[in-house]
Image (cartoon, rainbow, N blue to C red):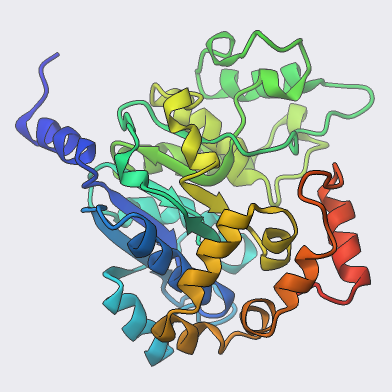
Length: 341
C-alpha cells in the first residue's frame, strides 16, 4: 500500500528527530520534574529538532484540586527551555487515577509521531539519534513482574492475559516470548509505561483509552482478584501496542532503558542506585542558575540536590551490590531519615 504524502513526510521528519515528545506536568511535584526533564533534554540532546510538549490537565469535575501550573517562574523557565504547554480536559480519570493523564492527553496532541515520557525522566543522551520505527509502537522494558498476581486456585498468568486478548479480538500466541516458560511473567507482553511511542497519537490513544476504560468498567471473571490501581495503564498498554502492530522494542532502542534516559521515579532511589554518570548529569542540569532558582523551591529537590542529602543516601549503598528488592533500598533510606517524595 502506498503512503500518502503526509505519512511519508511524518516518517521522514521522525527519522530526522522531528517527532513530538510529550510529558504530563501539573501543580506540585510534577511541575518541578517537568523542568528537570526539559533542561536535561536541552543539555544532553541539543540536536533534538521536534516539539517538547508539557501537557497540563485542566481543572474540572474529575479533579479535587486545580492541577494547572500557575507558578510564573516555572512557566517562564519552561518557555525558555522550548517547552510548549498544552492544556487538555480530563473526561475519564482525573484525581482518582492520575496515571490516566498519559492516556487522555493523546487525543489532544498534533497527529504526528510521538514519544511519551513520564515526567520523572532524565534525558542522559541523544534520544533523537535513536532509530524509532513509529509504525511499530513499543514501550519501556525496564519493568518487573508486577501484574498480574495470579490467585492460588487460578487462573494463572496465561489464563488472565488470554482473557484480555480474546476480549479485544487480538492474537495472544503472537505476543508471547517463547524463550520463557509458561506462566513466567516475561513470557507475556508487559511494559513499564514510563515511555512509549507510536505513529499516531489520535489512533493509538483511542485504542489505549477504549481498552483501559472497558477493562476498568468490566474487568471480567479472570481479573476478579486482580488490582487495577495503579496497574491499569500497564495492563492496557501492551494490548494497544499489539493491536497497532507493535511489540517489544528492538535492541537498537536499548539506550532508552540505559544510556539515553533514566526513569528515576524518586530522587532517593536515583541517588541510591543510579550510575555516577546519571548523578553527575542530574546535578549539572540542576545547578544551572535559572534551573536552580526554580527547583530549590520544592522541598524534596532542595534537600536532595542542594543540601547534600542525596550524597548521604549515595554513601549508604554499594552500586555493585545493591539489595535485590527495591523495598529493601527504600527501608534503608527511611531508617536513615532521608526519604522524601
